[in-house]
Image (cartoon, rainbow, N blue to C red; front, side, top):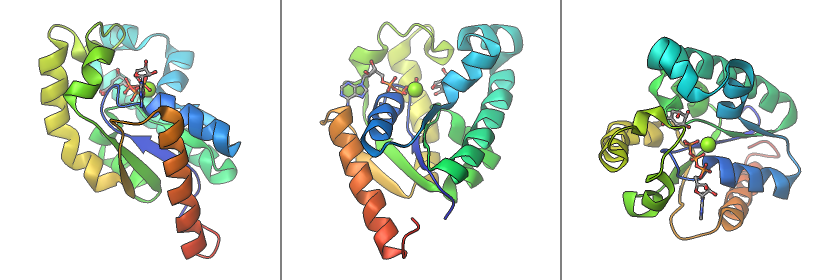
Length: 178
Ligand SMILES: Nc1ncnc2c1ncn2[C@@H]1O[C@H](COP(=O)(O)OP(=O)(O)OP(=O)(O)O)[C@@H](O)[C@H]1O
Ligand SMILES: O=C(O)C1=C[C@@H](O)[C@@H](O)[C@H](O)C1
Ligand SMILES: [Mg+2]
């Protein structure tokens, strides 16, 4: 299996927060594809305003491809965007790698999204939007993941430790490579 650890899951499930902790714990580099995209193209809201969701998905797919190439070399931890699983090429890439689905629910994310600045897809009615988007994507999160963890009742540091343990166990079972 190629290198790195990839985090997937719905908006505000904790991909960025857990990924940062996991990189700190393991000493691996951390790549957040949303941050890569905004570093290159400006705010997510601005990309959506200029070119709609397709424009964002195109630059996101390129950022994920680059992150995967870097992770092959460095073992980086990669936090994806919540909608990365929408693109078939991204799903193939994630399915071939050590990909962790951060499973959560509306009750857990609600306090994190109710203000919801910066996430154009939640504009209007964040509760209903999150629920509808999650229902549509959940099968993709399952399809792409090597491991699913319950991300609801633990801190990002605790979740990072759980993922690190599982990743190490898998490497042991596969003779040194996950
Ligand atoms: N396990 C957790 N416990 C408490 N707070 C958390 C936890 N995970 C994340 N948070 C907080 O919830 C908010 C959203 O988390 P984060 O940005 O990591 O989500 P995300 O999955 O990366 O979302 P997006 O798909 O929009 O990038 C942040 O303020 C973060 O600190
Ligand atoms: O779930 C989504 O579609 C998104 C999640 C965020 O991480 C960003 O990638 C963007 O706001 C879109
Ligand atoms: Mg994030």
